[in-house]
Length: 209
Image (cartoon, rainbow, N blue to C red; front, top):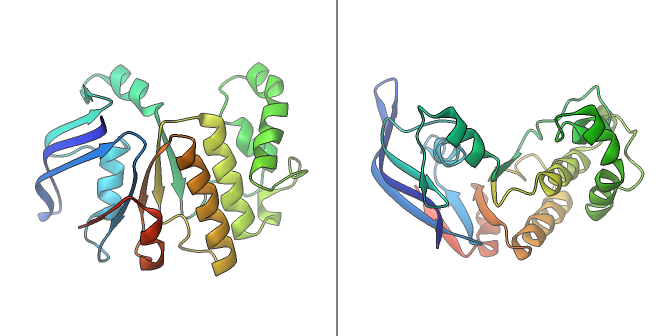
């Protein structure tokens, strides 16, 4: 079953045509890599799939439900199924690891009640006893592991990774890819943007754009 489906989408920026009548289906539980030259629209495509942007024309379906961009409730509901892993980690540098992960939960009560779960997820990514450590004290590889722990807490079915290893050294790159593969083994659908050809073998399918 297709968990993501794009039908005849078109998108342009400043009179530059990025996509025209583009179609794509991604099956539930699939590991897909999107690759191509700089400026080819890789990140734009991920933003459309992740509901961070919308096409000028065409239809987007998530879990067989068409996205109605005028109905914010539907978009918000479906966006809960989508989690993101960015190259720049998207963490607050001057706050602790624990604080950053607590932001997954909307209320103070939930944050307090879920501390044990947060610590469990940190342990899963090899970041034991870092709850009170500041983000700026963490290396790039450690920060990306914190970002992956955040994904494990959110439990989205679709995980969009935009150049998740782009700023990491070889050792940390392999470590992060192993964690991403672990999430895939748990049934997550992985959609990853990368220009790194050495990572193609991790995916079931590579889409060149």
